[in-house]
Length: 173
Image 1 (cartoon, rainbow, N blue to C red):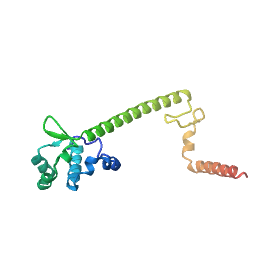
Image 2 (cartoon, one colour):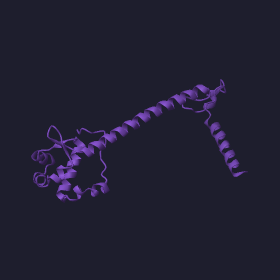
Image 3 (cartoon, rainbow, N blue to C red):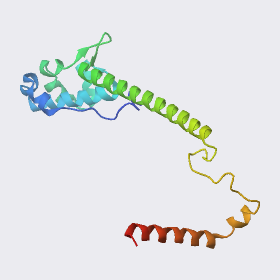
């Protein structure tokens, strides 16, 4: 399982920014391919081995790694105290993503709490509102209310009459 599972499945690469870097443009295609493979591994697992043999084993490409792991590629990474590569750019991006998610989560919690408080106040202010803010007919119920609930045809007629009246009023007739 990756160390970042649940944070973000991808990272953005801005082509204009990358192509503007002379360090990147001067790389061979093999170096560029290795760089992206290393960045993807760093995104999924935060660090990758700095040892070329271990890195080649991890990527499953012994010959390609040995030929492309040059200073042109290495300069995009920092060496950690435990002899691994880490991408400072990706870590800054990861931090930004996590902070943004935290702010969004806090905002959602705050908004949900405020909405619940508003609904509670609204229910308290009007005895004719249900817990979901829908109007009810409190005070107008009769002891024969259950009889009326069993008469769907009557309710349909009332609804049809209302719709017809509404349509006539909309047409101005």
